[in-house]
Length: 210
Image (cartoon, rainbow, N blue to C red; front, side, top):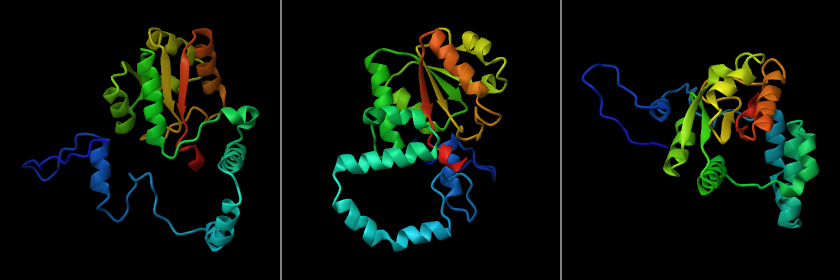
């Protein structure tokens, strides 16, 4: 993230360089809608988990790393309804932070000299990580996903020269989702990538909040 703070201009309203600057400014306010790490009271089910922490800790000590990872993978993908992915659970690679996953993705793209179309608007750190790794990027307007009957043709127009397509769903900062009105948009995106041998990269970081 770009964490530099801009000097305040002469006017009463401060010019903000990017989305990160808005988030930094929002951290000082009582009601902050820019923070992805929400501060909230525990629900009844969350409070029950906290009370069981000693039991969960003791159980975790008796499991191997592999057993713990597989238990998490099963719970996570079942929660998201991605049952097909569990058929290849041994191929799922876990990392402790989304930024680490992004760095791995950017490294792969750079190593293979692949260009990528990144959804726009998009939160700064995705763009900045790819830029830092010198991955060639082309913006893909979020609007091309608005109509499932037009997605395929618009991707042909905007993504023809790209090697990979990178989408965030629901998107940050707009909250739009390919799945809002059913799976048709996603199906068309996947069909285009299959037909034209494009790598499809999906960031589902915020999907649990849907």
